[in-house]
Length: 256
Image (cartoon, rainbow, N blue to C red; front, side, top):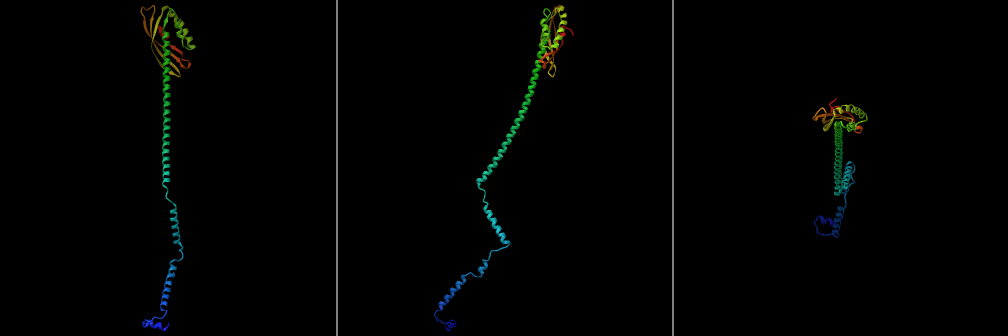
């Protein structure tokens, strides 16, 4: 180092050597430049990226954050559409169930109605058949009880009217036998219906008891005699409602 510089430093001399200020300035500037350059500490702090389990965990965490960010919340309009579809589905199911229940109830009611109607029809038809049988028996009994010894032709005709061929033949023979009694007694009688009641009926065959009030006049009685004659009439509805059997005709003339 030059002698004049030393002396200035130790002797506190105020002598200024040429260029000393410039040297100091240059040194200061160089020191500032050195401090501004990145050092070893800066290199260590910004070292290479970390590796290993911790790095993988950080990567996965980052991926999860990215994934969470990608799944955006469902738009309100889409959510309303979904709720509306669910509501419509429930409503349609309820309506369908109600319709099925109504159809089932209607079917049951129809079946019950048809069954009841069929029973009522059967009862009405059976009642009509009974009434018809009683009417046939009553008319026959009245006509069979009316006699006039002066003309027994109408009585013989009424006796076989509405009967089967077999019964007609049988009654015709009985009329010939009864004529032998009616003529000597000068038998004359009138009749009025009293009642007729079905006693039994089976497989379309009706047995009817017909009751007739008979007013009789003969040569043996000065006054008219009132009596009640009972006829048992069997009617077959399967054979055009023909009379297949008759009982009690003899009671009209006081015989068995």
